[in-house]
Length: 239
Length: 121
Ligand code: FES
Image (cartoon, rainbow over the protein chains, first blue to last red):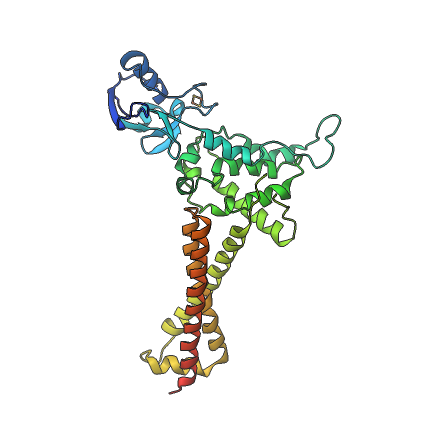
């Protein structure tokens, strides 16, 4: 019979945080998210957690399950053992139980200007992009911004100004995009004191990414691109 | 990209890798030449002095070894401290302190080496 030890905390009550244990029925194919819904509907209606799509697309059910940050909707209870502890994402303020305040996460994301900045006048019809040019960014667009990488990153833990693996992975998507014209300005910003060079290549982000993306590798590529731009005098103005 | 930012960490990151590469070379040659390839009995003070005073290139080699070591160590500690985003005043004090320590250690190292160069046997 699966047992969930769920982190409970309500800052409004002022009570200490604690773990509450719930016994669940054994149902073949049950995911952790379904288990949490089972608790909510049958055992404890006060439990708070986020979810939306239930199929690994929206990224809202990211939490610490067992020993790893994962998506609750993509994690089978059978795969993680009978007794599992469930905690909220780290490095963010807890709103209640498993729900955290994602504002800082999205604030960092906005800083990298996650949209195309064309160099001149936009074309009257469409931007032309060859399949090969598109293939360069295929990998990074799969990020669903679930914050698993952000929660697992020790640099985020100590430095609230660090842009974070999610923002840097997405940044490479724009740097590598043939339609974008602000590459050197982007690199100047990403090479700043809270950008790629703060990463210690710890690989936590890569290990936990539920979409098997490689933020560590993306940061490595950005480091090389920024260095090259610096040495060739192309690193744009970062103001 | 609206904030005014500095690219200092790009430079320190690069120099840390560069000094690391030099140190790898230095350590490899130092350990091999002075320990594994040394076949004439014990390595004592006299052997070290003889080697240091005998060759111009060994002198250059060790005079470079010291500043690279000092830089790599202090820059590495700074990289750790920077993770905690120290305030402007604190980071300025630490940087000034590191410069003083760095220069002092390099000078003391260089003086020790030049003494050895001239010690003879
Ligand atoms: S609920 Fe959307 S990713 Fe899990």
